[in-house]
Amino acid sequence: MMRTKGFAPEFDEGSRVLILGSFPSVKSRAEGFYYGNPQNRFWRMLSAFFGVGLPRTVAEKRALLHTYGVALWDMVASCEIEGSADAAIRAEETADISRLAARIPQAAILCNGAKAYALLILAAPELAPRAKRLPSTSPANPRYSEAAWHAALREAFQRQ
Image (cartoon, rainbow, N blue to C red; front, top):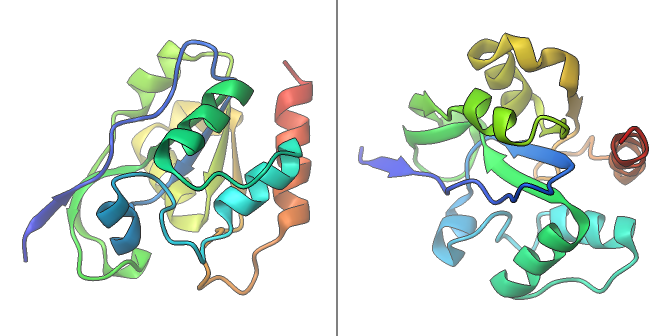
């Protein structure tokens, strides 16, 4: 199995919330940007929270993130994987999340799913107080809750 690399972090110094996923899906890797599967609820959830139209292109997605101070990265920098499921991730190399968190120290950390949260706690336990585990926005997750995401985003943006 070939080793596959994830994406670079998408952030700027004004990022107020850091959302961590596990690893890009097959469709995201084909698009070359985060949450590229149109069935993933991430972009619909985020655009609904901010009350803006759904971004369609990578440029529109980046603009939404930077306009509202949202940073994205995945906990797995590279791995062996077949398909998109978190359970298929093998021989992972975790991202240097501590380094990124130091560059945006005011940012709350929201983990998109159990795998992202578990990897964060293992790789950077010092960041646990800043982190919150949320239900994955993946179309495969029947326990997804837009209300939980919106509540966490409200809390994260209000505490700043």
